[in-house]
Image 1 (cartoon, rainbow, N blue to C red):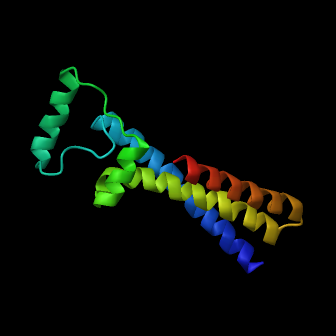
Image 2: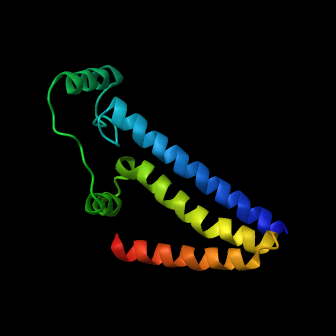
Length: 130
C-alpha cells in the first residue's frame, strides 16, 4: 500500500510539473514573446525596454523545434528549455506512476496493468518520434 501512495505522490508531482511548465511557457510567451525570456545579458531596465520594443515593432514569432531543444540540451543552454523539460518529465511521471499506483493500490489490477502497457508504448513511440 505504501508503494501505491508513493506512486500517486510521484504522479501528483509530475502533474504539478506539467502545469508549472505550461504556465511558464504561456507567461513567457505573453510577456517576452519567447520561452526563454529576454537575452540573458540585459539588466532589468534594459529587459523591460527590450520587451516594450518587441511589442511596438513587427517581429516574426519566435519558434522552437525539437531539433532546437536537442541542440540546447547538448550545448547546456538549460535556460532555453526548462519549461519544456518540466512538461516532458512531468508527463512521463504521470504516464508511468499513475497506472502503477492504480495497479498497486486498488482492486483494478487489469486497468493498472493496461495503463502501464499503454504508458510504455506511448513513451517508446515518443522517443522514436522526437
